[in-house]
Each structure stands twice: as C-alpha cells, then as structure tokens.
Image 1 (cartoon, rainbow, N blue to C red):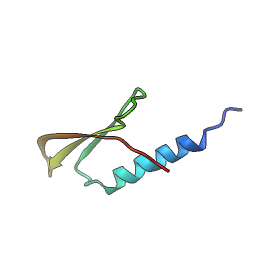
Image 2 (image 1 turned 60 degrees about the horizontal axis):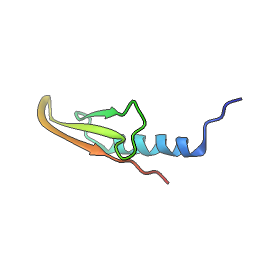
Image 3 (image 1 turned 90 degrees about the vertical axis):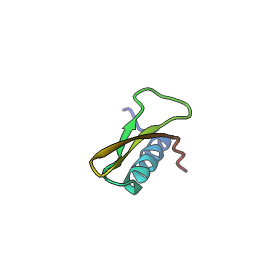
Image 4 (image 1 turned 60 degrees about the vertical axis):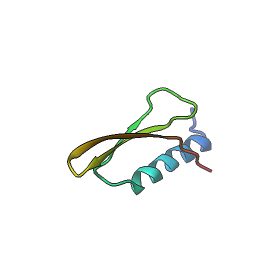
Amino acid sequence: MIKRTRTHEIDTLAVRKIISELPVDWIVRGQEERDYGIDLTIERFDGQNATGDYFLVQVKGT
C-alpha cells in the first residue's frame, strides 16, 4: 500500500495556512511541477480589479 509521507502532509498544511491568511480576492496559483524555490504565485487584486502585481512564495513547513 502506498503511503503519504509526513513531509508531504506538512507541506500541504503549510500551503493551506498561507492561503487562509490572504485576502479572498487575491488569486493563488500552485506550481504544477516540482520547483525548488517557488511554491506559489500570488496575484493581488483590489476588489474585482486586477492590479498587475504578482509575487512568488516559497513555503517551508516544519
């Protein structure tokens, strides 16, 4: 039987925590491929208006 590692569980919890702290109108995009350094791309909105502001996030869970 395949098991999910504790490290992967912690990674998921860390990403969920970051997302839960962001404003609901911001858009969060995960990386489809494993990248060493960038885990999320976040686009900032002002209400319904796109601002053109993006930032990259590296998530570290412990």
